[in-house]
Amino acid sequence: MTDATTTPTNTVSADTSNKKTGLSDAFRTHFAGDAPITDKAKNFAKAKPWASAALLGVAAVALLNTFRGTRG
Image: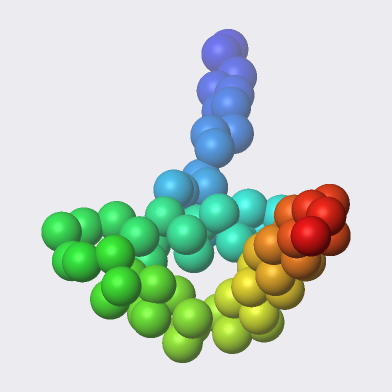
């Protein structure tokens, strides 16, 4: 008598993600393709406004810190 055992297979596809990889999946989705980079950035900003605002805020702080080090 043989007992048929099945091994579970990984059913997670590349289209599904968790919260940790959701932002990277959004980057991949919006910045892939042949469209100009400005259109890609606009589409990403419309889809993820909070992430875009955070990215803009970090860039602004970095820019202000570069000016802080100069002496006039």
